[in-house]
Image (cartoon, rainbow, N blue to C red; front, side, top):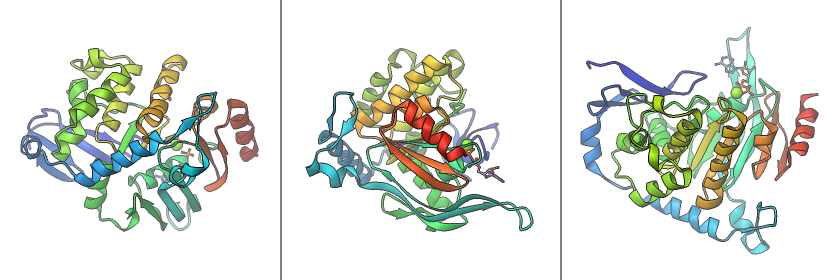
Length: 323
Ligand SMILES: Nc1ncnc2c1ncn2[C@@H]1O[C@H](COP(=O)(O)OP(=O)(O)O)[C@@H](O)[C@H]1O
Ligand SMILES: [Mg+2]
């Protein structure tokens, strides 16, 4: 391999999510595996099961109703559908470090993420938010316990299978955007699909681009875009293959308040308009107040949850679990 590799990696642990050489058009690295982008791109296969899942999510969305505040609620007849879980953790523990220097980041966590909801994960610094999210997204493995994502026990998968799962069924939005500098916004958005050798669903991708208001920015490279625009491109990339779940770790952490609010609104809309399941780690109570549900962590344990809270309720709950 001749050229330098650019890697889209999880900022905190540095592990590769997907990566590509900077002279894209030659080679793409998926996990540890090199594939030829052009060959893969020509394949054009579409996984029917993915289409079905996305359709389910859309149907699921259609039967929802809203109250006056614009928040979603469900009537009795849809309760079962509305509360179906897309990710479940069973007694998930994570221990870092060596025997004499152990950190218990997660302690027997049992929780679930509801399909089609916007869930915020909150808690004091070091409470295990990122670890929980990384485990649920297949970026890290729990020390013990199991995690089921869309019917698949992801803790039983090989590295290769996990890489495929992340690529095919999960979308990521990071604090630092993690766009490839050598690619246009358009090509960044389609990168996961190119890597997977899938033909994009043009109508879908165009809808996402329209909703995010980045039609005029598609030919630009990341360095020519503002932070907010870059994050909108990153959200479009996360949504492009209609993943089961979009995971966002502090997505507004690098943005000013008003741009951050805009980005949150787009994450919110992806749930509201597309039935997209979104899980967001944040320490910002205003951001969490945008969510349908807030899951609180403290010292590696689930410490409570709130439904459609306002900012004051989030602040009070955080204060509570921080004692
Ligand atoms: N790679 C690691 N090695 C050792 N300790 C870690 C590692 N990642 C996280 N930790 C520790 O695990 C705990 C939970 O971390 P984290 O999930 O990042 O918390 P949060 O995102 O809530 O701030 C913290 O005590 C942190 O120092
Ligand atoms: Mg964190």
